[in-house]
Every structure is written in structure tokens, then in C-alpha cells.
Length: 185
Image (cartoon, rainbow, N blue to C red; front, side):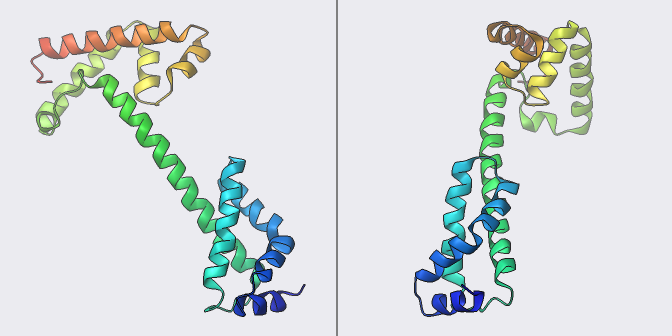
């Protein structure tokens, strides 16, 4: 069916216009969604959102080039879902990491002063230099690069328990060093 006829059906609020759109351009907008999303379920959900968005926007708007219009909608929806998915993962991952370091990091108001922040940086650098090399790498990869305990265990061919114990001991040592140096936790 021609694009003009599909758009006319949509203007007449005939749902057959969406059916024809899905038949003719379904692979186009799903491929556009796959560029932003890796989960097939997300792609399918967003494909439905694309059709809903077309249904909600076409009556007031007459698209000049219907395939481009559909791709623009699909790209926007895919990017929004990608941002949502990564924001959720990042926030939850950071929350877990911050809870692990909770007893080892100073109160925010104490570290805001430039002089104190510089002193804290020097203490942390000295702490990292004094760690055993493998523990230092584990610590940095976990708390700077946000790698999971399982990923670290796989990377170093050790058990997740080994990684957890090493990280726990490093956090304990860091806490003791900060207390010794007079840093308020």
C-alpha cells in the first residue's frame, strides 16, 4: 500500500493504517531500535511504542516522507529506552559500590575543603601503592571501573569469595588508615 493511503487511514483514525505501517515498515523501525537496544524484549516493547506514537502524532501532522518520520520516532524511543536502562543499572551499581565503601569514605562536608581533599588524595594514593599488586588491581577495577565481583573473579581465575575477601580486607585497612590519619568518617 502507498504511504499516502496509509496516512489517509491514520487521519481517518482507522487502525488498519497501523497494520499496514507494521507490515511495510516493521523491519525498518525494528532495525533502527536494534541500533540502540540489545534486548529483544526491549525492541518489541519499543516497536509497539513506535506504533502508538505514530497513532498519536499523525492526525495533526502529515509526514512528508513517511519512512523518515517513522525512523525519527523509532530512534527517539530507542535512545530514551537506552538511557533509561543504563541509568537504572548505573545507579543501582553505584549504590552497591557506595554501600561497600560506606565505612571507608569521609563525610562529604569534610572532604569539600581543598586542603583536606588534597590530603585525602595523598592518603589514598599511599594506601593504593602499599597494597599488594593483585589486591590493588582488584580494588581499582571494583571501585573505579565498577566491575562486578563475578567479572573480577573470572578475569583473574579465582573464586568470587576470594575477590570478596580481598576487597573486604582492603576496605578494612583503608578505614584503619583513615582513622589513624585523623580523617573523620
